[in-house]
Length: 143
Length: 435
Image 1 (cartoon, rainbow over the protein chains, first blue to last red):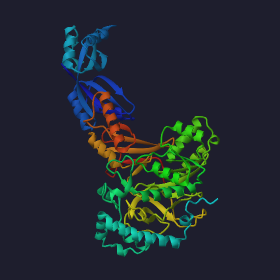
Image 2: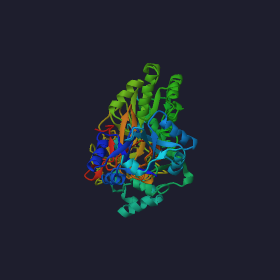
Image 3: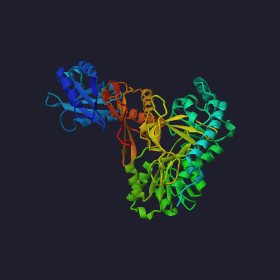
Image 4: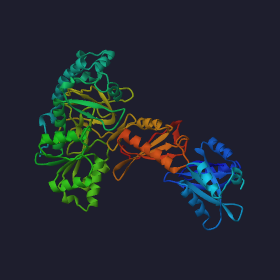
C-alpha cells in the first residue's frame, strides 16, 4: 500500500518556497506532512497532501518541477523506542532507508512515519510480519 | 639602452616596410593560390587573381578567412605545404568542435620564435637573464612560443609550464629568475602566493614579466607589477597566426607593436567588411606574409581594437595595436581558454537538460570563474538529492571535458533564466575588462 508523495524542486531564492505554498493554499490543498532536503543551490520539498494528483497537476501547470514518488507510511507507538523498533526490523531485513520523516497522528498513542526505501513491497512485508501497521492512502491523506 | 632584437626591422622607415610587405604579400598570395585550393576557390569566386595583388594597397581585394573557414577546412584544407615539410602542430586549447590546428615548417617556427625574441628583448631580456616560462606547454602555443624566443635571446630558460605554484616560487628563488612569462591571471596568483608565503618582492630577482593569452586591465597590470616587483609587458597572438608574438609591448607600455614584417594588420567594420582608416575602432584582421605551412590571408580575429602609427618614443616604427576592447562574436576568453556559449549548450542538450542556461563569468582574486545556471527539467528531477547531484556532477564533468575548464553548475527553477526581447541573455561577464 503505497502513499503518493509530491516532490518539488525549490531553488534557494527568496520567494520560491512561498510561491509553492501559496499555490497549494489557493487550490485548497491540505498538507499532512512535509520535509525539505536542501543543498547550497536548491532544495527538494517533499509533501504528503490530501489530494496528491490535484496538487501535482496544479504545480505542473504553474511550471514547477514536480514528481510523484511512491513511499510507505507506517504507524508506530508514540513513546520512546517506537521508531527504534521499526528501524530494527528494516535493519534485520537488510533494507536501507533513503530518507524518512515522521508526524504525529490524531491519536495520542500513535505516530506516523513516512519511509522512502528501494522496494516498498519487501519493506511493507517485513514491517507487517513484525506487527507494524502499514497505512493505507486514506489513512494518511485524511488524517 | 636600446632594447631591440632586430633593429633594422623594428625601426624600419615606413616606406621600406611597405616595400618589404608588398614583396612578401605578392609572393605569399601566389603561394597560397597555387597550393591551397580552398582559398583559390574563395579568390576565384571574388574574381581576384594573384596578378591583381601588386602591393599592400591591393590587400583589400582579397577575400576574408574566418573561424568558420578554419572549421570547414579542418584539418588539412588550409595547409600550403606538403605534410612532409611540416615539423610541428599547435592547437587552440580545449575547444572541442571549434578546434584550430595550425601547422609549422621549421622556417615558420624560426620566424615565430624570432617574434617572441623581440618581445623578450623589448622587455629588457638579454642572454644574462633567467627566463621562467610558466605558460602551459603542449598544444597550447604559449609555452613553446616563449620557450623558443627565450632560447633565441640566449636566456637561461626554465620550461616550468603552468601550475604547482609553490614549486614555481621555489625555482624563482633558487635559480634567480629575472623574467617570467605566463597568463596575467596566473602572474597575479603567483604574486598573491608569494605574499602568503611571507616572501617580499625584494627577495626575488624578477624584473620583467611578459603576459598574454587573455584579456587584462591596467589595474591588474599595476597590481601584478607591485606584487612581483616587476614591469609587466603585454603580448598578443593567436594560434591561427602562429601564437604569441604577433604583437608585443615596449617599455612605453602604450600599445603593442605588431611584427609587420610577418603580419599585415587591417581594421575593418565587422558588419560590412570595409577597411577603416588608421585610428578607427574595428575588427582586427591579419595577413601572414611569411608563413609557409599555414599562411592565412585576411584572417578575421574577431578582436576589436585600434591601430596607430603615432611615433613611439621607444624608437620602433612598427604599427601599434591597442589592447583588444571586446569581440565581434560571442567568444569569451576564460582562463586563457576560448569559450563559445554554444559549446555549453551542446553539452546541456546531450545530457538531457533544456537549452536554457546562463553563463556568468567573473574574476575573483584575479582568477576567472565560470558559473553555469541551468534550468531544472522534469527529466532530470528526482525526489532524492543524491540522484540530482550525481547528474550535476556528470554535467560538470562533461562541460569540463568540452571546454578544458571546470565550471560551477547551479540548478535553477524552470523558466526563470532572464530573457530580454524573447531572447535569453546567455552571458553575463562581470569582469569589466573593457571600457
